[in-house]
Length: 394
Image 1 (tube, helix red, strand yellow):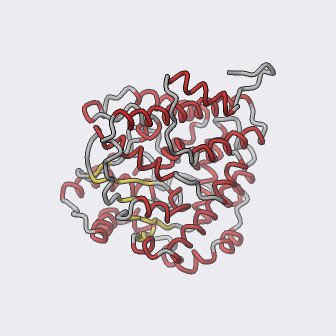
Image 2: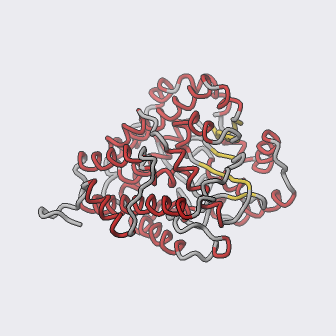
Image 3: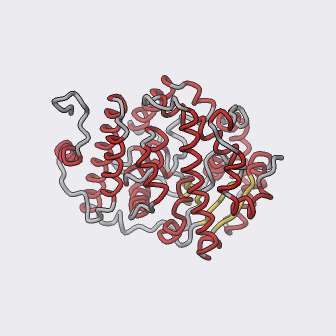
């Protein structure tokens, strides 16, 4: 809906009413903690005086997330067995973006006994995933068309990140339904919202996260949950509180080059929505966002023994150069059987997957994004002091 002045409406009350009218539902659930991020996001878009194309894209996204919350609440009311389910001993990859998290996630997910949420599930979690139609669900085509639109605007993204929504997806996609995701920052910029994510711990985000996994698990394929998102670094305490038996996998690579790689990717994502032109601004935003994540994650480890006990640390170089040995190390650490069938699937994946073949192809330079090695080392001095031995290249 547009206002009389021609602007896209991002009025909170109008958006809530529109979502209720389009879904035919009214109850957003007893947990209203998501409304904090909802209002922060709308205010941030208005404050940045976003162009109409970005406003329209944001409006579509917000309405989708609101309608999803309405439908999940209704499912829980009609089928209370959904929310009675437990999520047991998930393996969760939590490293900084561009540190080998995706390849680690993919290699874990090819385990015949594993269950990883697909990207299309995270984006469109309702109706509940059905095992009978898992590979033919019509939502696959819808989400893939969204990916194609990004590639049409920034084709070089294909050399940086995979764009296949049938592959294992990241938890930060699910956090969007709580209006607490770094996706909004990566895709739209929204400086004020990014500042809020850096400085606050969004209340209730893991309640939403667990609720989504319950929806996927109810009628969908079964297996040992494998999850991934660098965003977990912002709240490892909340993650462990929600999943006390979680097994956390922290991948490590020199943050200077990690930030550079991520800034390159973010600038191209934002270009697709009309932004990303000031590369130094993108680099500064990446540095601020993920330095905060690393500092918070490092602090959680030092202050919360439960978090520290749950983590295995992996060097990016080992994931790349000894993938089978690294997966074996993870499984032994957490007491999970590492089968011959899993090893065979890892070897097949490495030979056939475009994701594996893309390793090392992305070219970027910290200076292009105004990222100073000295500043990164200064801001993350505690991290370098503890994990520097994992950062050397092979």
